[in-house]
Image 1: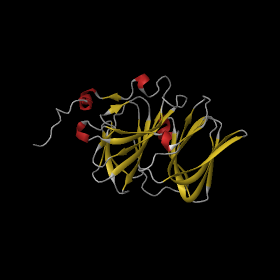
Image 2 (image 1 turned 90 degrees about the horizontal axis):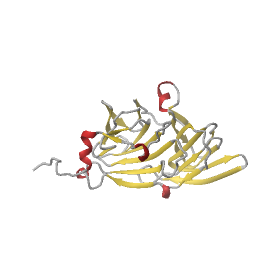
Image 3 (image 1 turned 90 degrees about the vertical axis):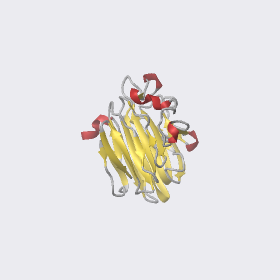
Image 4 (image 1 turned 45 degrees about the vertical axis):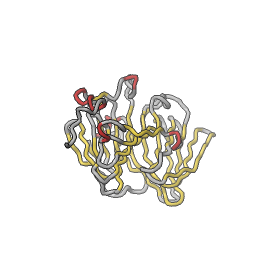
Length: 272
């Protein structure tokens, strides 16, 4: 399922995929918060865990539970050149964000979680970044993968959160794979008029700046970036009961007929 969003985001919180209606089966809220310089936003997590990933700008973010309050001034130049700051809080926390000079944008994720665990502000240095695909498939699937947290460093969470930067003209989410857990992709391009292509199951989509793709159980989802354009996308996976995403459940599941591309390059055709 594709959610198009061509106009600039409005100020305030825009929910792109709420836990209601046609997107209820994604089991999580997903949206973008845009703040002008000096403006503020507050959110109470109630029975949900919440995550706030900084897209760009300058802000003071605080989180409080009862009489305990912590805060931090954070900044991010842009999505492509810097790792993110990400605040993760369990149920019962109040989150406050005040935009500083130049304003700020954040991505918001929330899902039900009855477990109790500590709030944490993940720094850019704590975000694991790797150049994935290097040395395979003649570099046609080289991309940067950033993982903020998953089961290895945040097992109490019901979410897995990260970013990918698709190199111009190359593939990501490759080889083709699927998993039972719902996943959201949200895209930005550099320059903004860029585009890419993805296949969700057997349906192809042209991806443009600020588009969102919803991936449901069993849907295969490879994608490619147009030459000349870098493609950034946020990926959020919602664990499901009895099946967390990750090595323990042997996810993702690669399509058998395409697994060979992960090995020897001798079979790959090239012009003479």
